[in-house]
Image 1 (cartoon, rainbow, N blue to C red):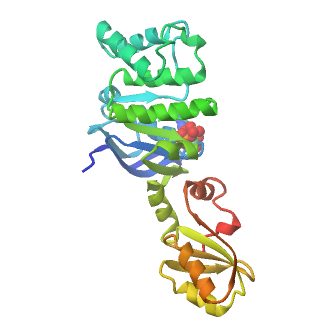
Image 2: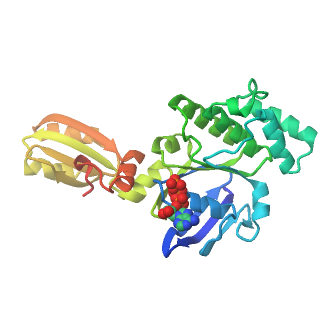
Image 3: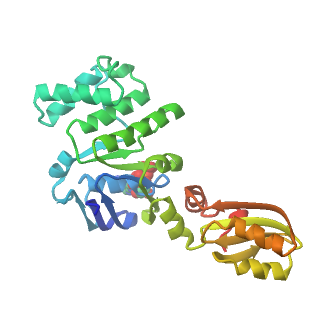
Length: 321
Ligand SMILES: Nc1ncnc2c1ncn2[C@@H]1O[C@H](COP(=O)(O)OP(=O)(O)OP(=O)(O)O)[C@@H](O)[C@H]1O
C-alpha cells in the first residue's frame, strides 16, 4: 500500500477577506510526481509556502513527512528541497562552488559535500560545466543546477515552482525528463506547480486542478475526466443520412451509450462511457443508413483545461449535455 507523505486537510489561507486557498484537502504519496495545475493566482504558491512553513494557514492542517510544518518549519526544511521560480545563485561562483556552499548551510561536512555535489552535477548533466561561473550558465543550465542544489541535502520531497519558466522548448523537454529520472533514481517525491498543462501531463502520476483557491479535481488523467465529466467521458460524433427515429432508438440501446444529442438534421453526438465506435458503425449499417463520418474523442486534460481555465467552456462540438 502506498505511504502518504503529504497530508493536507481543510487548509485555508485568507488574504484581505478573500481566500487564496480555500478548504484544500489533498494527500500525496511517497515516490509520486504530483502536479499542481492552475492558472496564475489560483493559490499554488500560497499552498507551497504553507507546506514549507513559511506562512501560517488561517485554518486547517498540514503534515509533511509526519511533521506539522506550521509548528516545525525548521524540521520540515531539512526534509524538503524547494526550487523557487526565481533562482538565487552566486553568479561569480562556479556551479560546484555554489553547491558546496549550499551544503555548508545544511551542515554537510566539506568532503562529503564535494562528493555529493560532483555526483549530482553529473546526474543533472552539468559535469562539463561544473567549474564555469554560474553567471555564464543559460536559464536551462541554472534550472538543472537548481535541481542539484535542492537535492544536495538528500531531501524526501522536492517542491518545484514553475520549473520550466523561461526555458526554450527543447530545454523544457530535457528538464522534464531529468525531473522524472531523479524521481525514479532517488525515489524522491516531487510536487510540481505549473500552469502548463502539457508539461504536467507528461511527467505527473497525478494532477490536482486548482482554480480560485479550490481543488476542483485530482487524480490521473482518466480519473479527472471521470470526476469532471461523470460517466460520459467519450463523445462520438456521427454524420449519417437518413437520421430517422428508428436509428436513434437502436443507437440509444447500444451498451455504453449514455445520451445522444442532435447537432443538425444529419449529425449527432453520442455520449458514452467507453469507446464503442465499431458498434455504432455496425448499427448504422444494419439500419440501412449511410455513414458519412464518425469521429471519436475522449476528454483528456485538454478539454479539462479549456473547460476550467479558459472561460469554463469548451467548444460547441464538445458541449456536455
Ligand atoms: N501576501 C499576499 N497578500 C495578499 N494577497 C496575496 C498574497 N499572496 C498571494 N495573494 C493572493 O492570493 C491569490 C493566490 O496567489 P498565489 O501566488 O498563491 O497563486 P499562484 O497559483 O501561485 O499563481 P502564480 O502562478 O501567479 O504565482 C492571488 O489572488 C494573490 O493575489
